[in-house]
Amino acid sequence: MKRSDYAYDLPEHLIAQAPLAERSASRLLHLEGGSGNLWDRMFADLPSLLRPGDVLVFNDTRVIPARLYGHKASGGRVEILIERLLDDRHAWAHVRASKSPKPGAELLLEGGYRCRVTGREDDLFALSTDESGPSFPDILAEIGHMPLPPYITRPDQVDDRERYQTVFARNLGAVAAPTAGLHFDAAMLERLDALGVRRAHVTLHVGSGTFQPVRVENLDEHRMHAEYCEIDQEAVDVIQAAQASGGRVVAVGTTAVRTLETAAASGSLQAYRGDTRLFIRPGFCFHCVDALLTNFHLPESTLLTLVCAFAGYEQTMAAYRHAVAQAYRFFSYGDAMFVTRPTE
Image 1 (cartoon, one colour):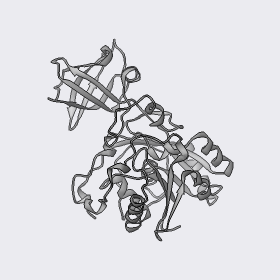
Image 2 (cartoon, rainbow, N blue to C red):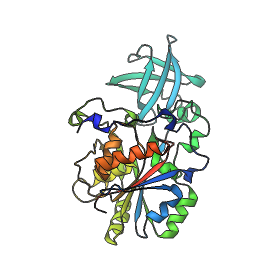
Image 3 (spheres, rainbow, N blue to C red):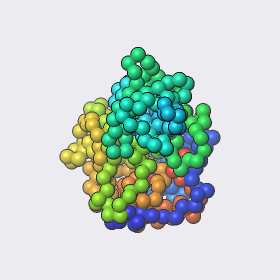
Image 4 (tube, rainbow, N blue to C red):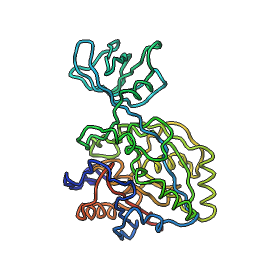
């Protein structure tokens, strides 16, 4: 299939610019894969769509305040988006400036902090901090801004530090939130626990590449950006116990899907730690995931191709047209979908 097959018309006013007052107050579009049946629900209805013994798989990555502002020694303004922290002193980052800084250039940041460019690979710059000065985690904690997606046109605010973060976030490293998880609050998790729904956690540090459009018309030519992911043996055991007792594996977000299916590439789920470039599109054979909770995704994006692979192309695109017609809120701070596979 082609990139243009995943285009759809989206009025700009449907792109959510801020979260709702309550995390769990969003709407929920229920799509039955295969049949294409649709139900307009509320996120509060999620427990009615789950069964005792099902396991929800959450991505527990934590978003870092990855955006920094400053200037070059020559005076030109720079904007830095940390893509990956290699350790406390070294990072890969996107650097926006009127003229790209060269290796050796010093970047002077807000608050008197500084870092240095040590190299470049494709679109990413290697940055380091001096051993005698503050580390990157310290700098980000002090002056970093939350890296809101490009389609959110307002500056980040203090509230975004908490709301652009899931309540179960614990492993620092993402530069974008696993947005399906943003709908959960403590009360919802307690309801699901009382229902007998199990929980497992994986980690995928979402990179800024998640917002990059597919630039080639032929999807076979698209190369996925690398993202670090991890699933430990404890999570594998919880998931396999649920499967053995007839429970479904419900991935919370496309990042959880990609982690699980990367770890199950051999046909059975195994512990895994490393990068993934898994590109899921129609024709993909799912080995692990039975149902998916997800937000609405950008047109012509790899995340939309994943949902189409999961629920069926025609069914998914029809669901998106329905969501537009019913004025659902789209993207990171928007509404959610609950999607089952055609085999259901």
